[in-house]
Image (cartoon, rainbow, N blue to C red; front, side):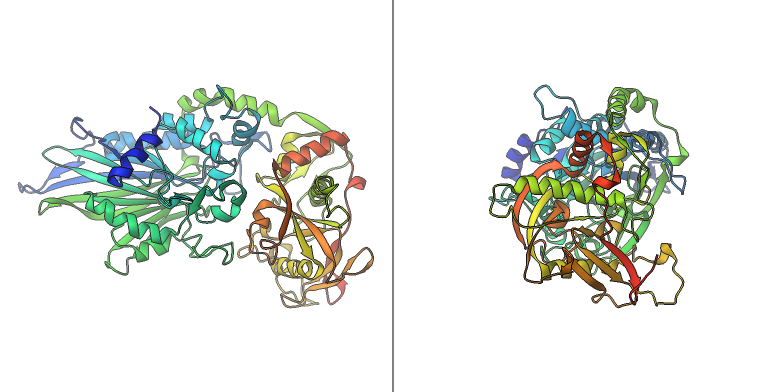
Length: 603
């Protein structure tokens, strides 16, 4: 039965409640051998509970790469997909007894693959009589108990998210996602479940859901004035004592927030993006945190709470359904209540099992539809284009992105007071493996070039601001002395500055002198063959992530917005190629920049 948010919000107005489920109400005794034991003839009761968790599924149902039209593979030999997770979950439930397990997710579910794009945009779940989202189908079938909201849940707008929420048999949690006007919870803050123990009171488990405050920046156009996103520590401090006062024996937090304590959006919101370890350290009363958002693999991280001195166990399973976290709780009933005696976390690996045929059968039609969609031919390429060298050489394939963005923005500004201003465009080398082969070009090829669902924004910048923007971008490179050997794998600060936070800017010419320290690397910056005028005005065609402050590039977030749209950039690329029919570098490629050392080209 779909989770009824309206009913919940009605209840919560009266009780301050989230979702309470009597999981084991009237249920037979726990099935797992040894789940409940009496010790040495004493009346001490013990109970074992396993909380399972996934995160950052990003639309991965099967071990399939829609961009390569083949089974997914990577250098580490990983496997992906909820069909694999389903097999792992079934194994754990068989071993522990289904009644002694809980299954959670920490967000970023409905964006990330052509499968999720298709059901948001091509055959949308919001249409009258529209389809059930494949992620809802899969997660309902697997039997999730609750999931936290991720930031990417908001990418397709609130209507799509609410429709997805309605299709789920379990609640989407977000205690810090509030109504912008009333500041009351806009989603269920928590979920509570009772586990039946023969001859003892039930074990009550509360799950608090927290999402990412960066949503206010990254999806500003979709949420501004409607929803607000508060800090994780602040909201955990408010809700955890409430859950304890309601009798929770165990408090688990499902947090769409990494552990590093850092933010990628500068100081534009007062809250930390990756706050999970801070929550563990600062908010007493939490036993375990399922971590999301950072796409890292953390089997177990132990953090001591500063106020209680107790250890909180954190775990982050690898994204795309490649791992499943297990929190194993041991409880003992003493002095009239259940006490957590120990918690340990571990990971199960999707590559060790096969797909669950139930999930395969359930979603084979949807999968086939999307495979057919992405393999549609939309044009013909005169030569192979690739991103392999795009991090350190001006690659035509990235020029394609900037050319499309320039054309769309120029057309949008016709008839406005800004129509005569020069249009520049930014783009990042997102992927190191994208390729558009010579010959037939499909939607799949073009989608693989631009893997994010970013949309386009036009911002007004001065020449001086563009120069500062380029200097900031050039921090991506490691300072390299003129005579030193060049190893392309060590040329960039990719650990601190991911490839998607390095920007090309088209419409200008410039050198990046990597022999110089960061901050003084941009040389020979010219526009129209003359040195750039710092006072001149330019329109920058920029993706919404960058426009709203993603990557903390200078000036762009605060700059005047001239225009924006909700059509994805990758859709615009497909439209541009379809209209041209032929993808020929002479129509879009230009050498705008190069790496130098003391004026000598590196390549």
